Length: 152
Image (tube, rainbow, N blue to C red; front, side, top):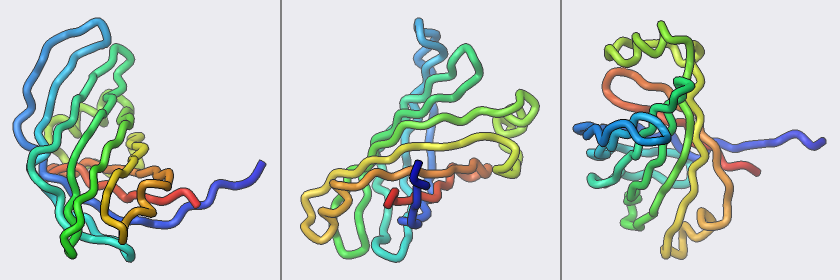
């Protein structure tokens, strides 16, 4: 089996606003968080995350926090890029309790991975429409940070 190779695409820092609880559904405890903005930067693209995205968070009965995010990126040269990702965050209960209290926790103590996809009409960034990406995340008190990688 061939080894999967990746290349760093960008690092993204997000600001997350108020979280609205929707209650217990048949799938788990559902909450919706507003993406207030952020920044992304890499060798091939950089810019801001526009306010107005959202994360439909599901806390499953097995303790996994399942993410379902839609947001809009605006590059420094004005291109608009839609970004969606799904992912999982989980770990030992004591570690997750520390994260939930807003403590700084080393990312090696829990699992936080996502699978981003992109959509844009900007010709310069049309290559994003055709790639598969993966990301590793960590959750400092100020908001999530992702290192996004293109699968080569």
